[in-house]
Length: 289
Image (cartoon, rainbow, N blue to C red; front, side, top):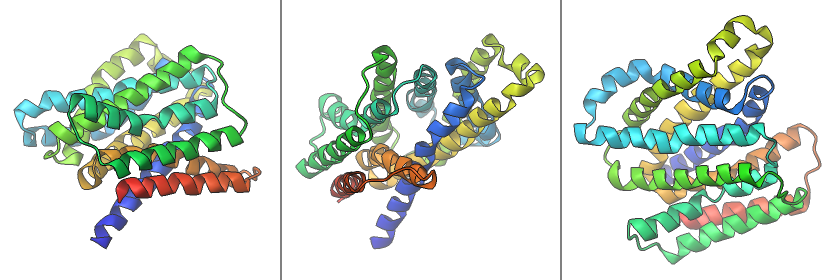
């Protein structure tokens, strides 16, 4: 039992680190690419990596479940990739983006109760609220929440809603599916519309003739391979092992990673921020318990 819990926490930490570092790659990508190009390259590269595996894995999926697997890819990867990239392109404040992104566990609870008629344990709801409260105070301590560009901030809000919907979809309708099979097939399928968007955005010509855009394209590709392909497989494994709500609490670990990068960059880390991280982790622990 303790070994299972340890594995869950390791998966939690790895996912928090991957997704917490993804904003760095998006910032590098936007130096020469727009939001549609970053999102398209992210999904296309992830699907391209998984394509050889998907050819074999799709035969192992129940036929009636394949449309749901593709829908999971759209909700959990395709649309959020573009929504986040477009929002980052337009200089969304990082504190506001962090708070909105961390609404995912709340959406998981609300959608589960309203649409799936789930009776959620009080301790889990309290854990989510404690974690969110710690995140809110942390964001305020780092300089306040900007209300500029609310339209683009709403794109992140929509992405978190889609994340919450996808977590419930996987938890209730795809629970018996192998997580790796699900990740490879879903990403391989959604890479097709992503390739069409890249063609419409003329990214392939940019890759051939614009040498300055090379680092941005590489960053978007790495974001897809690590932040979408590998992370999606690990996320589905975590949902299967520990449940959708605990898996969605990974979004609360992103500020911890942000503090880590700030520490390496010799930024000033205050006791208030460290205290907020303790509150966030206590909320995650209570939810998992």
